[in-house]
Length: 374
Image (tube, rainbow, N blue to C red; front, side, top):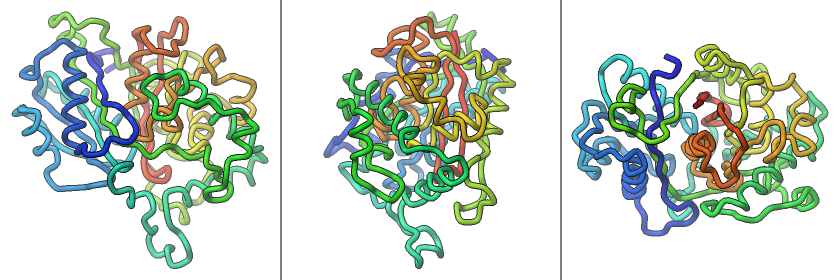
């Protein structure tokens, strides 16, 4: 399926605190901008795939959205895999196009936990809540702590991720937080859940984002300007809750990456820019290892000395990622990868031809990988 489908358009709302905005209104705005970017009318769309809002789940959300869009699609559904849902929906759209079931798909996501309800992030975690197991941060703190024990990583290794993402976000006019930090400021940031500092943790954000997907053939027929080819995708899902996992420092991101690289006929050495899910700084470090960019326990040294900053060997999260651009998870990473390959990103990687995107959901439960190219 390498290169059979393309991303023809991208669009998003403002990111940050958007009081009074419903998730449907933000999805509609993002979809409208994505269609304008692709320069196609909405009556060409025959599929709408949406990630359900994490902060306000509701039945028949997909149908509610298509009504607001004024679209009567052949296929329409809402899916939840946490932050991995966006690439999963992209994958489903590609397979449906390849099977001849649909022609043009909108894939979108919007949420408003910053101005609305963010209780989903602080909820109790199963039976272990009786012993203090609360919040998303607690699970990542346990994984982070285990990584420290197994690999002897230093706080500065995690700080390198935070510093790079905040540096890139500071240059991005669309970013929710446009303030770079130094390593000293990272080390001085307050604790959230030991060993997580404030600057290890992503933002809580309102916002919406969308992309338009179609076959490469249809993009040529419609005269789409600068379509970006989808070279590979893959998935890997961990069934165990965190306290039950036999190991904490590796996930089935390995499987997702292996599948995507095989489909694309590429490997880590071929990647020019990486947009890796960074809900917490431990996440991109483990992803780099699971994806084969470095050996287990070596991601800390790998990201040090500017390697993941613009101009480094592997520029990472060039628009700021979840740590700086928006905590609205996942889709913005794909949009930034598209802009890098079009050559129109604010913090542009010179000569970028191949981009890697990772999405992750839950507490490293779900994982999806996307490889894009020119």
